[in-house]
Structure formats: structure tokens, C-alpha cells
Image 1 (cartoon, rainbow, N blue to C red):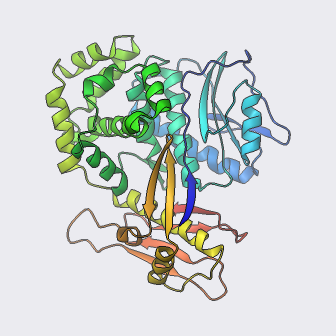
Image 2 (image 1 turned 90 degrees about the horizontal axis):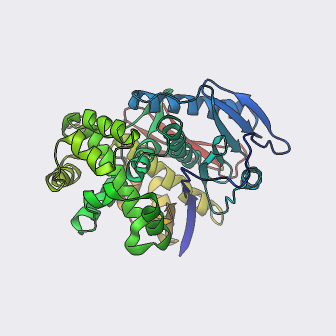
Image 3 (image 1 turned 120 degrees about the horizontal axis):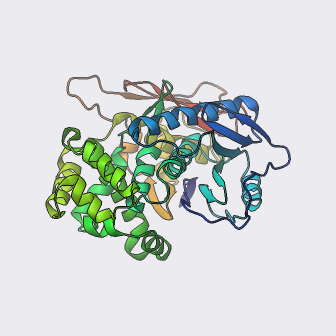
Length: 406
């Protein structure tokens, strides 16, 4: 069986105490510093690529601020960002501030006057880099406005909420979810594995990390998926009726009110069971997958399959031929999220189909797969979504790619 990995492991260190008591960021050899609207960036990337990523994070930061407008930055100035080409430089940078980043895909570090978001970009799809930056960037945003008081379920749930967002024409589109991830949440509820709300709301950072590290009963996936789904429900569920209460809850915990008390006062009830049932109804009956997010997920699967097939074989001229070749391998894409492995197999027919439109009567989207004579990789796109989505292959012919929206 042929396996491939898309690295999306996120090590979220929201309140890390650094070994080195310094407030100056190291600048590895060959790196430089530059500034954007909201960030001071340490990087070794070509300047055009650095500007693109800094502009992406500026738009993300403005998305955070729009959704969490009640919270002001406690200290003036730009936030710190470190993005490197290679993992080794990323690890060297972290060692320079006393952190062992082995096994991490990116992290936010806070302590001793430092507040920095760091990652690297090579050998992973840009969509994964964006997810890491957006997830960990939320931790940085929260730390600089609320501090360490936000309960971990809300901190990680909000981080995943923004991590799943997509950049469309320079603006962050939030509140979206792919079909695959919604199905995971539904399975969690239907199999009776969802945690009681009260347990999750009371959970300390220490208990959360213990559950993630021990891996008991798939805890990492349950914790992150359920927290993300709860945040999504509180922001968008039942026509947004809970949004203001959720913001009130965040304000209360930011003033050091215990989480369960803050939830009771904000939502007006001690009884969380009816609230959890409303969440379950939302997930099972009302939550519709976003076609754009689903399309991005499927194009990523196809691009990874194409790269794996191209190592040993000629690429087929049609999408049907690609599916047959990947089934014959057989090809499985492994996504590692928060230490948990999620699998997508070429046996799943829907991964070779464009997502269905949300509204009846709209023209069904289509996947376009065109292999030009002599081309190393096919033209690959989905037409008919709210914006076109395509794979843009790197010119070096080695299979690197980006997913471009619009």
C-alpha cells in the first residue's frame, strides 16, 4: 500500500515559559527582518514570498480583530512573526530562544518579553502553512489581548475556527467547514463519544495536555474537533442567536471569572444539557458543508495523489484514469492533525467529484483535469464554486503546488 503524508501537525504552546530570558528575537544566518502593517517578520524567504505571507497574515489579523473587536491590544506595536524556508532554520531559530521544536509544524511562544509565531514553508503545501499560521496566530492575538485567562477549549476552538478559514480575494472567509470534517463531528456524536459540555468548559490546560499526550480514547481529535464545532455553533448556530452571549462569556473569563460561572452568567443558565442537545441538533441536522472548503480539501487530495503517482508512472490523460491508477496503488493520504492521523483513500468516490452546490437549481461545479502533451503536471481546477479554485504547480516541475482561490 502506498502512503503519503501531508504535514499539518500543530504544536500549540500558548503560554510557553522560555528558557532564555531575552526579549530580542534571534536572526539566523542568511535571514533578515522586515515589517508589514501588523507584523515584524524574521525570515530567509525571497522578499516577494515574504511580502505575500506577511500580507496574508495582515488580512488574517484583521479577520481576528473583526470577530473579536471588544478586545484591545495591551501593548502597542507590531506582533512578531518568524517564517523560514527550511525546517532546520526554524528549529535553529527556536533553539535561539530556548525551545526544542522537534516534531512541531509551527508554534506560538510567549514569555520573558517575547511573543512570536514561528513556522517554515518548504516540503508542505501552502494550504497547510496557512492553517498553521492562522491557528497559531489566533493564540498570539488572544495572548496579546486577553492574556492567559481564556479557557483552553475556547482558545483552541477559536484557533481551529480561524485555522479553517480561507483567504478569498484578500479577505478572510470564516465560518466554513469541509464535508470531511463535519462528518467527523457527526460520527463523534452518533457514536456517543462527544464530551459533556460541562467537562470541556471546566477543563484545565494541564488536563487538556495530559489527554492529548496520552492519546486516551482518541482524545486529541475529540478535544480539538469538538471545541472547534462548539465555537462554530456559538458564532453561527440558530441564526447567530448565541454570538453576543459567547462574546460576553469571553469578556467575563478575560476578567478572571471562572469558566463555568462565566458561561452561566453569559448564557443565563446552569443547565448545560439542553444547550448541548441544541448543539447536537445543529451538527446533525443544520450544519451544511461549505463547497469552497470541500473543494480545496479535494484538490489537495488530488494534487498529493498526482505527485505520488508521478514518482513511478506516467500520469493518465483523464481524471477517471487518475482515479483508476490511484485505486490500483492503492493510494491513501494521511493527514496528521494534533497528533491524530486522519485518512483519505482513493477508494472514496467523492474525493474525485466536485462538491455539491448548497442551493438547489444552481449549476453543479465540475473538476477540470487537463494534461497537456509534454507537461509534468496537469491543469487541475474546480469551476462553478463561489470563486474558481485551481492548483498552481511550481515551475521547478518537482510537484510543489499552491491552491489558488479566485
